[in-house]
Image (tube, rainbow, N blue to C red; front, side, top):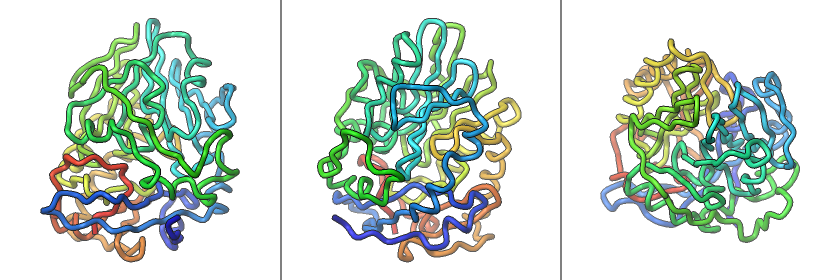
Length: 352
């Protein structure tokens, strides 16, 4: 078991006081030989601070849907759109089920700590395809439960299809990672994510017709090489994955590409006037479209050195605080250090 160290100032520094940023744990595999070696920095939020905020106000404003699960909280976000929230683990991962007349799309499958398929089947009898916002462990945990999984074509994605072993994820299942203990049936001593198979490759601009509902796929690399967003133009909804959420946004891993992230957030910010809601992958199931423009301005200010960051994570990370979110990155990335983005990663390692 690895040693835990608390986040001291990050929670209080953001407008989302008490919002836990996603946790981090080291990986044992090294990045590309040309890159700086990531550090083994592990952080976890004070459970009392984070759990006391649940359910988050933005989620409370939505309609709760009863499902046969004590782990997933399900909220109706819009007609035919359900948020499956895993709020009892500090990642607070959110998956989305989008239902049309003839089919459904599950955008992310969560942590993999409790089966997600029974929850999906309680919400729709229609055939379900899976697509991930990116392939960090907390978004692909239930992929192996489904027969049809769509994925972008990239070495990074193919590497992550092997699943993540327990030694990469053990710090995500320590007692402090849960509000009320691990979900029933989870063996925290062996927890891992299973390998999964992509049955079809998708690319930027592809559309998925669910029957009366067309979903457009937007590739938005930066947080990871394989990050995607989803756009429902007719219903004015934009799923942002980990490219944006109302909390400290993680931009510190070896696979992070800040140049690509800036281009991606600028692309999404252009869409803000045409959508009414953002649907992020952590903490709250809805966010304001105007946040995208704010993030576009914020990341440029950070990279130009116009704002001062505060050291976190034992000094290996820098947090830059803004009114509605924060940016969590490292000086090495700000200085231009990059890997080739081909090696898979759970997203839990820090590039110093």
